[in-house]
Amino acid sequence: MARLLVAVDGSECSLRALAHAIDVARRGGTEIEALNVQIPIMSGHVREFVSQSMIDQYHRSEGEVALAPAVRLLNESGVPYNASMVVGHIAETIVAEAAKRHCDAIVMGTHGMGGMRNIFLGSVAMRVIHAADRPVTLIK
Image (tube, rainbow, N blue to C red; front, top):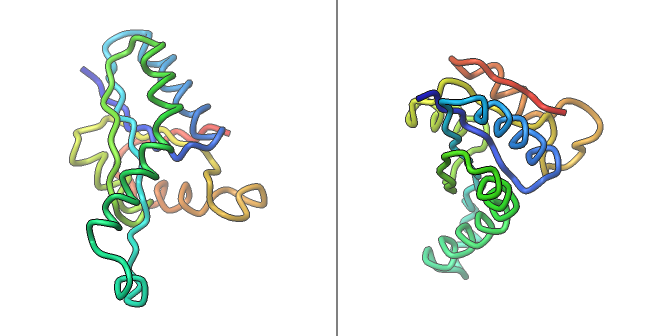
């Protein structure tokens, strides 16, 4: 079975990328790996006041919020999928998770929830394109 990793951050652009992946999956034989990547909290100052379990809960909560609209779309679609959240540097983690999960391709939006998203092609998308060893489809 073919497998597509779809980067999901809750943005409209990432949901359009997911809709594209669902269309591909409906043609048969494709499973979707919906992945949300949360940025690690690395500041020593934050860690002075917040426990690791609080940081973990924050990441889980943010991941659930970002994945919720994607999970609704996937449930409605009837295509096989897995939805998950991981913590890491976004572009590098997307590429690494695609390899780890044996995905045949990566599908993602051109712009996500990051700042200045409407000015130029998203920096995360550009870094994924350059780092990936498998096809990357960008959806506007």
